[in-house]
Length: 465
Image (cartoon, rainbow, N blue to C red; front, side, top):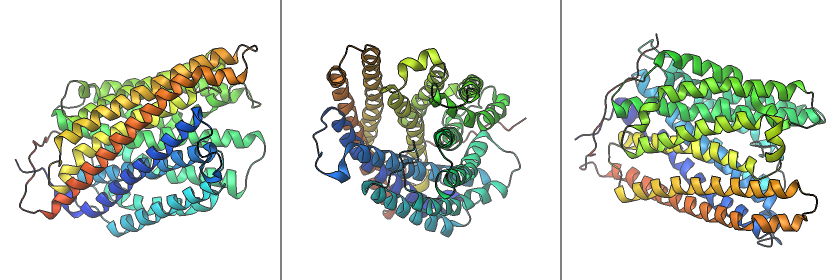
């Protein structure tokens, strides 16, 4: 059967493929850096004589490449594609997208060079140097212009949940980046206020940028693949506004027990509890992804489960009685991997598997590589998160016992860190296979005689009431 290729897909093919390919190259780069960082956790002598590749710099390099290289590029590509499709007309301002993408990736490259040379900031999810942030702001804004034009100029005035989340991610990231830049770099606040602002940015980067990018994909792909209306759709708008209004208030949970006003962690506890309503609505709307088939739905269903579990864990660890056992352990890293890799990345994987055949008009090059990537990615994520959780449990028990020397703690967690290293190897292999399959599929557009062979679905989401 011929591919379900619209005028939006064919006319916007080049900027979308540029964004997606850039993201996948950064995914492989971040995977190699993350593997090196995990190796250094249990074998600190590896590259210890190379200042550029010490653990502190490598871990910051891996995080920067993953968040601003992979998640940003892939999330922006899918957001633009969804907004363009729902607008009913080809994307406008495509030259802005191409230019913005070029300068965005140059800025990320400059950020990695700066971090390697010792200019990392030390702030979570904002380790990149301040001198590249203005370029990132302008580049992102240039890319977002096309999506916001598609949003404002759509032929139908009806807005869907995928509309809301994609447009929110395009609009809100420049806002939170500009505030963090002013308060941490241009006119920096002092003392403990820096920790408060940094915690706010890290939480907003997740709840107001990366999570909406993934959810926009899920809300678009699930009803298209299943061919069914989203159940309980009338609650979707409430879940969206709950995330937008409450999500940024949960950053104070990382400051429990710190020298900050008591009301900041208290507000975070309440916000985490309120955010569970949003999580429940997402699960209620997208529960159809668990009954469908296809690799896209399998990735998205895994991402939804990880998103729900992550929200529950965030709410649980916001209480002091629990945080006292999880703070300053590998549990924080496990939470981050569950959110960024387990939830956001897998939803973007599902979106790419659904979108690429429609963007190119060609089927995926290798079904075997698709299945291998599915097994390696999901298995690697489960192994990585589980090994870090087990290491954190042992670490917490040893830290609470003053008789245990610090060297023994490292020895006790060594087997689980080896498991985490194996998980990073598995994830890196899966990323390499996915990238090769993507490049091979994208190159098939040069063969105009070969048509795609997959069954398109035409069902749309239910309109807002």
